[in-house]
Image 1 (spheres, rainbow, N blue to C red):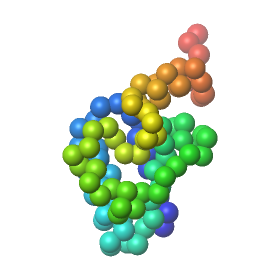
Image 2: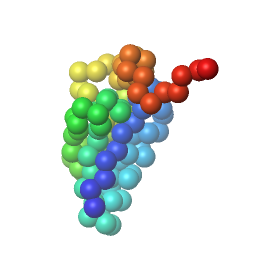
Image 3: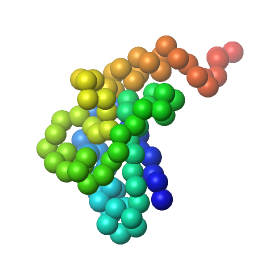
Image 4: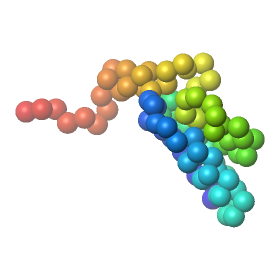
Length: 95
C-alpha cells in the first residue's frame, strides 16, 4: 500500500518519533511505501512530496522541526498558516 503523510507545521514535540515509527512499522511488517507532502496541505494541492523511506527517517529523532517539510523552509508552520490565510479554500463565510 502507498501511504501519504502530511503535517500541519508548527512546534509539535514527538511528531518526528511518530512519523519514524509509522514508516518503520509499515515498511518492516506490511511492506508499505510512504510519501510525505511538503509544507502541509500546500504539498497536496501543488503535488510536492518526498519519499519517506528508512533512509529518510533515519536520524530524525534529535533533529529540530518536523519531517516532511521543505528543506529551505525555516518556519514551515508559519508559512503554511500564512498561505492558508491568503487562500481561504472551503471556509464558510460568517453571516
